[in-house]
Amino acid sequence: MSHDKSLWLRAVFIMLCGYLFTLPAFGQSDMATPPPETTPEVTAVATNMPEVQRGVVSVESAFVRAAPDLNSDSIASVFERDTLEIIGRNADGLWFEVRRPNRTFSLGWISAALLDLDFFPETLPMTDATTGVIGEQAIPIEHTAVYLVAEANIRAAPEFGSEILVVAPLGAILPATGRDSGLTWIYVNYRGTIGWVNIVTIRRPPALLDLPDIAFELTGIAPLPVVVIPPEVQLSQVQAFRDFVTASRDVASDLVPFWETILEGEIMPCEPPDFVTSYLVTAQDVQELPELNRFVPRYNEGVDLLNESIAPLTDCGVLRTEVVNEAKNDAINANIIMEATLQQLNSVETIIRDANDLPPRPTITPTQIP
Image (cartoon, rainbow, N blue to C red; front, side, top):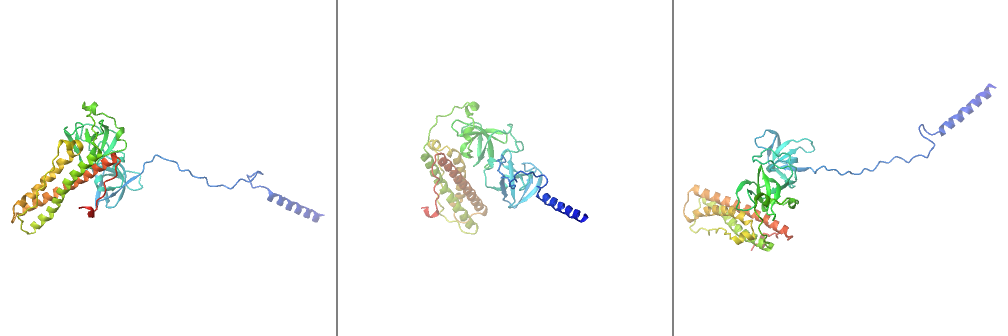
């Protein structure tokens, strides 16, 4: 009897084990099995984070300073080909606030002239509006930044004959807050001095037309009747001036090696090259291309230097070393001025062509020069 009871208990135990294996796992129900888990799709979310701009150190070594000022303490050193992230600019755009790549804190300030850039620096935010400000007017936080493509006179009124308040260097970034009705003059603030700069000296930002017309309100000078000069006439003026400058540049370039041979002991020939004639500007020329009013004085400085370099050529024979050295230096400086003027003329021509939807100036190869 006890043996039968043992068999019966064993059978019950086997049946219970089979039943337990058919039950769902703990926490599950008898509902349908859910589909396997999948990784949710990640959707990119747009942010307002600005694009990080970078610059490469272009000198052998340089200091990073605590403020945008040469007299400020040096707090770090950087070396040629180092890459820096640029996070801001100062009031005149000649200093950049930088940091090391992939860092979140500022390293300090470095002169803009020590970096190679591949972007427009006027797009940087202004992160210092007080250091280096020497005028009485505070730098406006709300403004349109304009970049100087040439050295520029800041004038008291929007006209060429008005007083020059200060001269701003090439590469400066000026906060602009107004313009004249003809979009010829822009109202700017350079290191605390406010005044007017001619539009040919700046790289035109897209928002230039959004500036308010404040010329009459500030100066009382009524806008002149608009005289539309055809772009073909403007371009012909540019080319005429370019021809004068190129001829002067070529003479200056030839004089440098000529004076070097004299320094080496050559005897001065008695038949000097022809003198260069200064470029003469008429009222009609200035009306057709007002930019000549700015370029010509600088060009004529170069012509004066060129003539001073040519003057000793009237004396044949042996010249004193100091006379030859001075003539050589005059030729070098004249050549520099002529080259700079040619570059400025190229910028003016680009502006004229862009404003009138004209094709760019064709590139002339040496084989095309007559």
